[in-house]
Length: 167
Image (tube, rainbow, N blue to C red):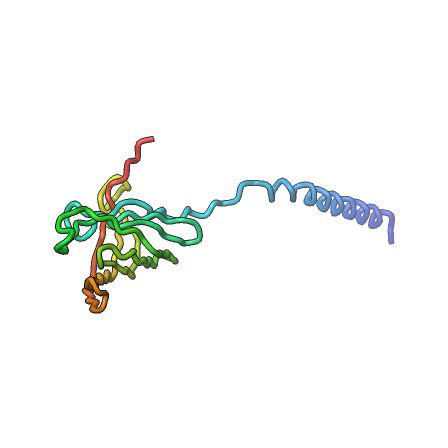
């Protein structure tokens, strides 16, 4: 090897060591830089229309897909006709937009729901129908002796109430 080749190899080796040290020094800085944040999951919590004018559904999405809430509705049996009743969820779950819930029994009536929740026709959260719950609602009724139970099933669509977005 000539002196010139040895000198070139020495410079190349120095350049490579410099790049390696520089890369190792930059690694902690680059990894500490803010990463792209994935878009936040939709917060479907809120009030939704229910079956009749004046009735509503309150849904609260909690950690790990647990859902709590209640239905506020007018009673329609002989004992509670036109009284306002709140039926709290006994269980509820949200998994990738698939919503299910079951209410507690109040005066011999309870509900189950199986469907989806997602974006609706509303353009902004402060508009009705920004979110929509669609699916199958089952209404169960039992007599006073709890011997006979009837079931009514219907397809439903519940629209979100406008949200208050003032800071």
